[in-house]
Structures are given as C-alpha cells and as structure tokens.
Length: 268
Length: 252
Image (cartoon, rainbow over all chains, first blue to last red):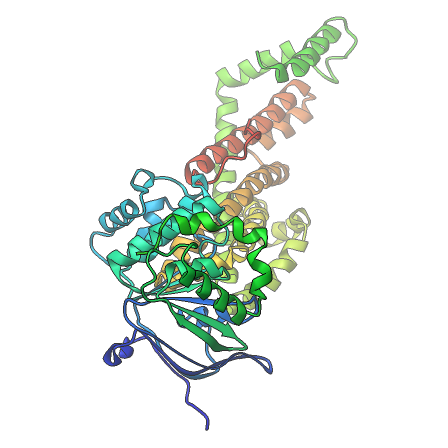
C-alpha cells in the first residue's frame, strides 16, 4: 500500500496534540532505505533523545524533521517554528554574536530579542564579539541562543555537544535542561552518548535499521545519578539495544571517566 | 630605525658614491642626487602633477569599469547555475587571452585615443576580480548556507548576509591583483601615441635621452603601486575586521 508523501510544516500536528507526527517515513539513498517506514510522535514540550550507532539514520531523521532533506515516502508533520542546532555552531563569522542571533528574526526589536537570548545563555557580555574570538562552548551557546530566540515549537539538536570537551559538555547539559524548562519546546536530541540521552530526555529512542527499535520512558528517576540502580539498569538496557555487551563494559574505564556528569544531579 | 631600510639605503649610498667617482656614466644612470633634483624640478614646474593626474584618471576609470564588469559577471556566474553556464566559459576564454595582445585590435577598432587606453585597462582588470570573486562565492561553506536556510532567510537575504560577506576576502585579493594589473596596463597603453600622462613623460624623456626623468617616472609608478596596495589593506582592515588574527603573523 503506497503512502502519499505528505510533508506539512503548517503545524497541522497541533490539532492532534502532537508536535511531531510521522507515519511510514522512508528515506532511500539508491536502493538502501536509511529510514524504513518509521513512525514517530513527539508531544509538545517533550524532550526526546535519539540514540543509534553511526549510520543508523539519526541525522537523516533530524534533517527530514528540519526540512533540510526530502523524504522518499510517508507522512511527516512538524511545526513551522522549528529551529536546529548542529554539531558545529555554524555562526556567520562576519556577524557579531548578537547579529548572528538577530539574523532572519522577523520581529521589530530583533536586537533586543537577541540580547535577551544571549543573556539566557550567560553570554550577555559577548554581544559584540566576533565568532572567531569565541571558544567552542561559547560559540555553541550562541548557536543555542540563536535557535531559542526564534521561539521554536520544535528544537532539533544534532549532536550539539559532540565537539566539546567533557567539562564544557556538562555545563551545556545543565544549560539545555534549564532552557528547555523555561521555554518548553519539544526537543529531539540526536546523540551517540547513552549517558547524555538518559540524563536529559523524558524518552529515549533507539534507532536501528531505519526504525525505532527500542524506547524507554525515563519518567521520574530522581535525582538522575549514576549511583541510582534504576539508572544503571536503564543504561544497561539502552546499551544492549544498541548491541553493546554491558556486563563487560561495567568494569571498563570508559564508565569511570563519566560519572561526574551524573553526580552533579542534573536531573530533576 | 626599521632594519628593513638598511640594505636599500646602503645601495643608494653606494650608487651615489659611484656616480660621484665617475664609475657610472650619467647618461646610463644619473646619481640619486641628480634624480632628486629632477624630481624637484618636475614637481615645482607642475608638469609631474599634470601628467600624473591624467594617468591616475585613466587608471581609475579603467579600473572602475573593469572592477564593475568583473563583479557583475562573477555574481552572475557565481549565484546561479544558468549564469555559470552562460558566463564562465566566455570568461575563461577571455582570461586565456593576454590583454597586451589585443592592443593592435583595439587601435584598429577605437583608434589611438582614450577609449583604447581605458578599454585595455578595463579588460585587464576585470579578469582578476572575476576569477577571485567567482571562486569566493563558490567556495562558501555550504553548511553556513544551510544554517542560513534554517534561520528562514530568503534567497536575497542569503546572498546579502551569507554569500557576499563570505566572498568579500576573495574580492579583496582580486582587487589587489587588479590594481597591480591596472598599473601594468597603464604603462602599456601610455606607450601608444600618448600626448599626456606619465607614459608620455617617459617617451619624451627617451627622445631627449633624459634618463633622470625616466627614473623619476619609474619611481612614481612604483610609489603608486605601494600606495594602492596600502589603500586596499586599509579597506580590508575595516571590512574584514571579523577575520581572526593568525598569531605570529603580523601584516607589515
């Protein structure tokens, strides 16, 4: 049964109480289906993390939601007010920080809005800075401010912390969580980091072979800490759904390098 | 004192001494002091300024036409696929043509007046502008264009805020080349039966075997080259203030 391609950015999904509504979403490159009849719903204000091995189609899904790539088949509804933060900040080097945020803002007081967004990411003093003079973390915060200044209904984050060092990443996690609580956009965070996903999201999806192969609703583990048995069990389940043998990993130093993130109590 | 001035000053001193000692005949190469005296004469008589203004005027008009032409063609070729197909092959053919070779044709077409002179300068300067600006536009990071798209920029806003500012550094490289080429073209066209301009002064001096006047004029050409380069640098510093300074590399 062929499904008509329907991509709506009119916010029609709002009628059904969903921010994102996708049915039978398929994206082919040649004969290979990277997204294979995928179904996905994201509620307004919901924070969803998308995990998957590299090449599993995570970024393809995000780009489809952002309207950057076409879909081959299926139904996709996403709000018109969608903002994207990429792995690289992608700031225009020839625009000052506030100008980058104000770029394309269709409001009368764009500069004021931009400065307010900068203050929210704790960069009020850097309004007139050139992007080249910002650190990686600062530039990514400007990118985040640029996305939020648009007051998106859907915020797409494509491995936005991937290029940052571990310490900067921790403070970015905290910032994203705070901003999400303030603005309450629906969020889709694409990441390859199981801990990051479990730490930030309401719901974690695992993408495999072009479909949502596994999902976990995190609900009310509080505080989210690596010491929590529930958290460890969740982590183990997510890793095994990604095809990683967890008991072996429990003893590996990789785990020992990360626990600070959890101990900081970034959960609720 | 700047240590880079040391070797030129040393050479100048050696030259002056050799001339005074009669080792270099004045007909071949006059002493620096004689050249300075000639420069002073030309300056106070007003001859130098008159001819310099004529030359500068030619260069400026030719350059303005050439830069405009190169810019417009680069925008046409750089900003649309159809424009590229239409403009780029022709520009590549024109580029391969040495502009000095066109002089006889231009003389037949436009005579030996100002049209030929200015036309040749325009023809010579449009090439570096076209090549660098077109390359700059095509070399813009596609990720920035994509990001601009997600910010909801229209096509014209993308061109204005992303593509053109991104291509500006390349444009300045082209402008510096074009200024150099415009002086070269100026020298060439002012050899064509000119009755005014620095090139005319040189030709006249050759007829009267005035090596000192020729030397003054050559100095004027090189000072023009230095001044125009400094001028572009100044513009760059303002327009490209956003560019990161590479540590350890200082612009002289």
